[in-house]
Length: 465
Ligand SMILES: Cc1cc2nc3c(=O)[nH]c(=O)nc-3n(C[C@H](O)[C@H](O)[C@H](O)COP(=O)(O)OP(=O)(O)OC[C@H]3O[C@@H](n4cnc5c(N)ncnc54)[C@H](O)[C@@H]3O)c2cc1C
Image 1: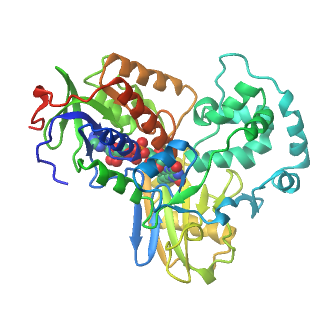
Image 2: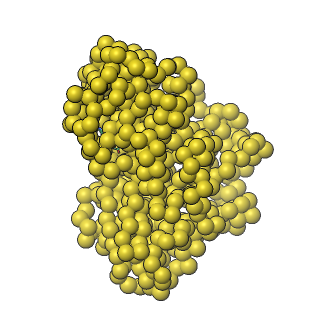
Image 3: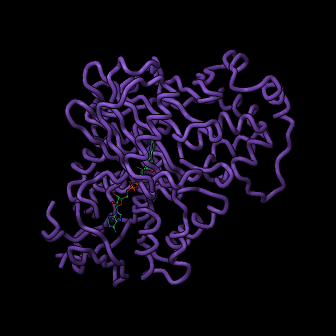
């Protein structure tokens, strides 16, 4: 879209066209607000990025969205996207874990748990004690590692929660906060005094749908279709400064100033810190302290006959200390149609994260060598890939480490101090695509409850210089 045509007076300007910003803009536009979205990159979607070529289709960011919250289904329906989404093949429910030089399926139910070789008999017996383990002293903020070891024992940290944390956050369980990174698990202890009692109690309540989905052209279809419906989305235009002015804000951009009654920042934390510098006095740079994990994704195409493993699952996770460098590997062409040409399979390996920050600094040849070595061992890959693509994300996923609450509190303070300025994005209250869609929906509902659009506000006419 062109950077220059003049905007009509805006009720709200969204900065950042990732899924958070586009979800908010979609709902506001739906409510009749005059909204525009600025996006620094030449394309919308932020972390959601699909790459297609010659019958291959790879996700460079998230591969799937889990319909874990009701707001996700509502947004898809309202945006006319519910019918075109595709749900992952049932085999996707099966996941593998690398332990002692082989892939072991994660247990699917109580019987599978009793017989799985993932945990020793001692570790399984120790679970019986879990309901009687007390809570930590009031006010303690534990790491995930400390919490899981205390309640479930070290094997559950190593072979269950640790790899899961790597899969979602590319994070380090010794630094992530149980309260902020996995609030649902933390609340089981807080509300029921035990994870097992809490999980049993929740099974009696309504169960979330939990379908894992994408779209035939790939996940990028989601931001693309939302952006189409928002209409005024300007790619290749970066916000550089925010200034308060009578009745609203002036946002300086690489294409000239924009004025709006309200501004919603849906950008990464360090960008928010820079943009807030002019409008907030105290601790304005605080968000720049939020750590991010760096991740490299290596996408590979193979002839099916060159991969020995049945690939009958979502993929595998590799616990740290078990001899593989990859954090895990997905089997995308087993989940969705049209991900690889006939007779070929698509694999996507993840490296890096908080426990291996050096990985993203390796060159392509080094990354490929590490991945091919690991896949030879884990999947019985017998030849070189027929296609490879490397994507590095130096600031992939924000980390909710111990002390994260100070960022959430500061965000709330800023919104109170500066009426009309709103903070969104994945660095505060949830990193998954579903969390971002849900949090942006809830935030927009609050904005709509407490604000009215300024129809025809004279001061804001012809807002772009
Ligand atoms: C490699 C990877 C794999 C992932 N896997 C999964 C997964 O499988 N499932 C899942 O649910 N989640 C996954 N996630 C997480 C999820 O994709 C992200 O948390 C989510 O998409 C973030 O959305 P957002 O809109 O908050 O931020 P972003 O997508 O980061 O969007 C922010 C936007 O702001 C723009 N911007 C920055 N500066 C400016 C500026 N000055 N002016 C204007 N615009 C600006 C950026 O260009 C960007 O488009 C993954 C993330 C990554 C990186």
